[in-house]
Amino acid sequence: MSISTTSDRPARRTTWLLPVLGLVLVAASGVGAWSNWYLWHPMSGLVVTIAAVGLLLVGGLALLVRSNRLRPIGLVLAVAAVGTVVGQQVGPDRPAVRRHDSGTLRLVLTAPAAFDASGKASCGSAADASQVVVDPDEFGLARSSDRADFHYVYVTIGDMYDYGARTARSDHLSVVITVMNAGIPADADPNVRPGETRHTSDAASNLVLAPGHSVNGGSITFSNLALGDPADPARRSDLAGTVSWTCGPLSTGPGPDEPLPGEDEPSDLPVSG
Image 1 (cartoon, one colour):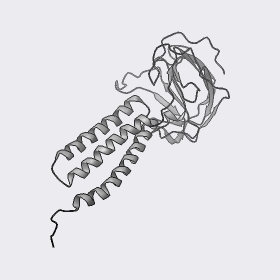
Image 2 (tube, helix red, strand yellow; image 1 turned 120 degrees about the horizontal axis):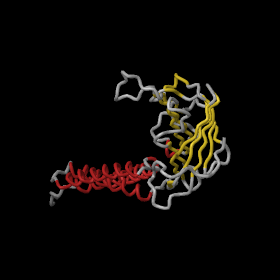
Image 3 (tube, one colour; image 1 turned 180 degrees about the vertical axis):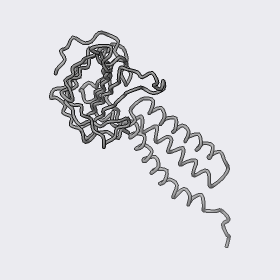
Image 4 (cartoon, helix red, strand yellow; image 1 turned 30 degrees about the vertical axis):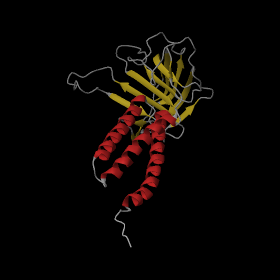
């Protein structure tokens, strides 16, 4: 009787390795699709792609090593890298956020004191207005005098801007108001903005989006914002009122995923109160 000297280890390794590689491919594709949806900004997607390339390089080096222990690990890493990139490509895409050529912001406060000011803004929106971002001009809202405080208002609508935010709400609305004192003390630290107070919406804030908002504008009534940077849920703001915005025509050129500060004149559309 002849005795076979051929080892059956490669066959046994193939038996368990193929299902593992299949599971890794499916899981990595899911991670890639998830990152394509939630890490929607191009720079975030680039980071994921670079990480996948790194995995592929490490896996390739492991495959080049003549080691029965390292080669399966190299295959797993290489398949994970390929699956991640495939998931990014075939996964669902976020709606494009288009830049507007111009915009305006208006802040009307009813508490703690009456206040009404407007200013230029930059706008970005999805075609169905499900995602909206409105940022103030570099000088904020108009000031009644040189001694008046600076007010900067930021508005976002949609879950694209929720990821990673501790203050994210279930309705995907966000209002941030930064108030900077105009007076600068003589002994102020030049590296610190003096007298800056940030008011940020969170889950406990009262926000109401007016019906009928669109790519042309909208308004949100707010109260009970959180104070601090980062926002402290235990400290509540006494600001209450309405922020409204208008967005001018869409930019004719290819715009970024986040709008640039508006440089044109404000839109002629009326600002709702």
